Amino acid sequence: MPPLGVARPTDFDPVAAPSPAVVAVAATPTVEAVIAVHLDDVVAFARWRLRGAASVDLDDVVSVTFQRVARSLDRYDPARATVRTWVLGVTANVCREHIRQRARRQENPLDDEGPFAEVAPGCPESDAARREEVAWARRLVDTLEEPKRTAWLLFHVLDFTETEALQFFQQEGVAVSSVHTVRAWMRRANEKLQQAAERYRRSLHGE
Amino acid sequence: MNDTPPEARRVAAALRRDAKLDPGDRARLLALALAAAAPVAAAPPAPSRTGPPWMALGLTAALLATGAAWVRTRDVPPPSSSARAAPAPAPVAPVVTAPTVVAAPVVSPPVAEAVAAPARVASRRPVRPTPAAAPTAAVVAAQPAAPAVAPPHTPTLAEELRVVRAARAANDQGRASAALAALGAAPSLRILWEEGAAERVVALCALDRRDEAAALGAAVLRRSPAGASAARVRRSCAGGR
Image 1 (cartoon, each protein chain N blue to C red):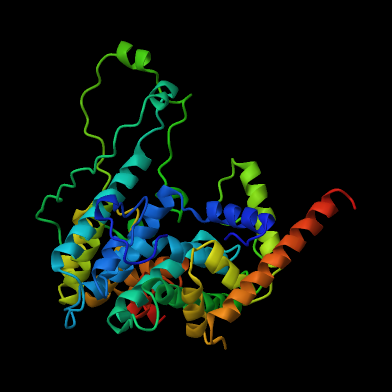
Image 2: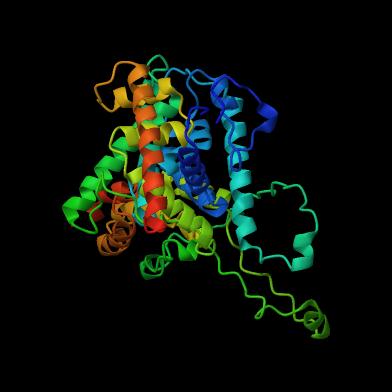
């Protein structure tokens, strides 16, 4: 996703390819604009956090997240975080609460730090090769520890900048003071992923 | 990502592909998000730091039109192989017509009917006819013309949203009967079933029809215990049981 400030209003297609153009126009965007631009990020992040949860959980998290976003949009402070970082901070909180509630009710409790489920909701059944590749990718990412895993996913999957990732962790209360730390986490995560991929390949060949 | 090792790049590419939302799911989640944000967004605005009003209106209209287009697209049977080979026409946003205002009955349909909620995901995706089951064009042409029967109207996302908002506004103004009338006059909600059911619960509570409210409220809470609609149900008379 291109950074805020890139205004391409003629490209705007809120469903297929949301553009941040509208968000860039207004200092504090409307809630409809926030939903249009950040829905995909929220869903991707929530799916990752709620690993293996049914789509009903995802629906609940998306619904509660945007309800809260709407309620507190007037308190959003652009000096502290980009809209996307702030919205994903709300999403992270909602996911945490949701996971806690599920664990309390002991209905298929979800492990906040646990591994991905083999198949996420919404993964098409028909594309076996793709599913296999996704499962492989998840297994590798699961070898990373927090907060490296989150940092890596924010940066490489959700296209966060290092600064946005830093803001995200600060919102989350993680003790990190500079992008150098985030950069170091990502470097280490990359090395670990490379090693895990090589181990995986060796195991396939029975070495 | 120049310093990203090749395997890490492959992992990222796979997860990025997986993160892409299916258009149908996106339309459904978009509707959910808009409905969840609607009561707050509809509240009197605070001193505005937002963009000009036309922007919000235009964006909302675009969202609804495109969302409705997705919903309608999902209702259409898959094209034949020859149709698929032809270049796809440019998407055209459908003209969303406002539902006709009907002198609606004050009494709502039986709650039992409303409680029979569509299955969460499956029913929100209309079943497409299989090629085997669908008659071919030749067969259809050979058959005598059947008397014209208007197909049952399937509400678009925009229509559903309008119904739910009307019901919510009526409930918020203490006009429970009007809320039930708005919900009763509309075709059954599919995408926003929970939101509509929650408004019905609130209205039933206001009319002291507590047993009906409890039955419907329980259905909403079963389907979506942590959603925005569940929160609305819990705040009603159906939430205290």
